[in-house]
Figure 1 (cartoon, rainbow, N blue to C red):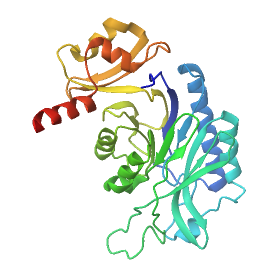
Figure 2 (cartoon, helix red, strand yellow):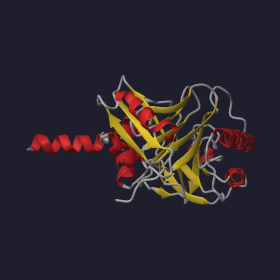
Figure 3 (cartoon, helix red, strand yellow):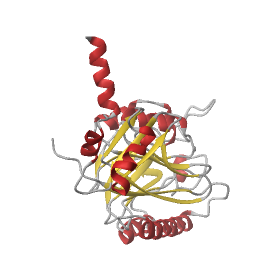
Figure 4 (cartoon, rainbow, N blue to C red):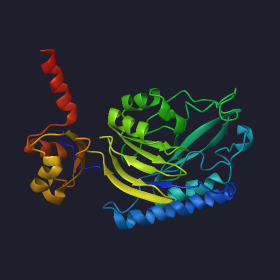
Length: 312
């Protein structure tokens, strides 16, 4: 098996847009441009990569509010969308922008993934829009999506889920089956419990972005790797080559990694949950070699071994 070397990725997210009126479509685009600018500055000064790889924005960040989906909808040909494209190009980052998207006579609650050149790399259409109590339509006339694409980016594989998708398992399962390593989760809700559960169950990172209370990076362990509670941006450097380790006496709540490898390894471990995420910072010594050197095993391998023992 090829040794897994460190794969650092810098993600940006935000608690943004809540508690104040929508400023207007062009004004919102300008606000987002400034928001991405501040993320880029934080990435330049606070990460080893020195720049952004993926930015996630809250649900429907680009569209005005209102009861009718047709009146809220924008198209990708709308001149204002060039502001979002320009932000992605200027900061050489992938950017997830959500809006009520008008296309082919229908409107979807859609997340558009822009690549580093500002081109559309893909679109995810929310599979589970909300029909509120006594409503016969989804979100004022939104058409549900039916596909769960995984997008190949230059740093890894990205899937997308939107807000109420968190209440269902189908999309999260499909993204795992498709090889997603990071799931962008633009949301109007700051939901945490189900989001963390999906991350843990499917062993990928989830990056949420919301208008209030919580924007977070959930690790494949189910633990929160980084969080922002109040308005503003959050930038976090993660590693796509990792091990999820459960409790063992020899691990000593992660201290064994610190003692053996110092700053050549990183981890966050929760004694309350008896689980942690571990990664290598050493390009010459991957995480699998570190795990083997300490004589511990990834939780997935441990569970499989225990299942075989139980089966006899």
